[in-house]
Amino acid sequence: TWHRLSLPTAPTRGMSDQTTLALTFLVVALVLALPVLKFLGKQLGQLGGAPGSGTVVGTSYGGGDGLFTLAEVSKHNTSSDVWVVIKHKVYDLSEFIDEHPGGIQAIMKRAGSDATTGFFGPQHPSRVHDMIDEYLIGKLVLETEKDE
Image (cartoon, rainbow, N blue to C red; front, top):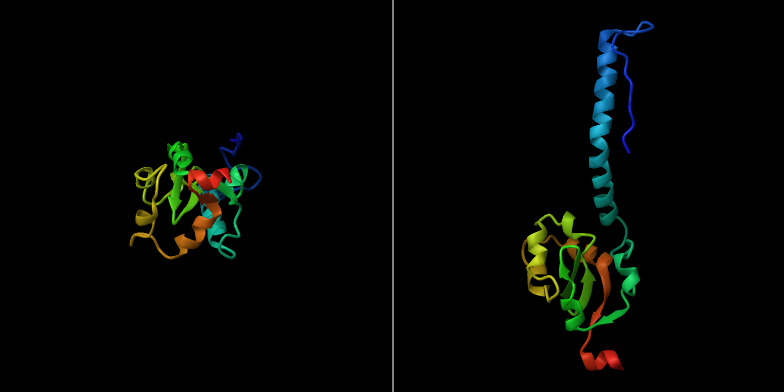
């Protein structure tokens, strides 16, 4: 939410023009810095702690314990609902896709399918392999295994 901020237009009570200008600059800098600080906080939160210690995004789908067939995964192939398979594990990247440093299209190439080869490419630093656990929603199974 934006709040209206009234700054003095002329020096009052002994405030010099320099002080008024400095305060104006400080307020503007803080307002502009808030989105950046929010983004950095989120990124640092993903890096901190043990691998997989972050909030599991897919709790509504089973929080990592779900069993999904490739047919089910293939239905999640839009930028607002994107699942991928990496080494027989299913990940919901819907919350992450807009933040992906390689852009949305890099993930959308394999949305709803197996992304193992692309994920283990040279473009990903090793820390990404730990961060992905945050988005784990389950494992890939055959249709016959799911019915058991």
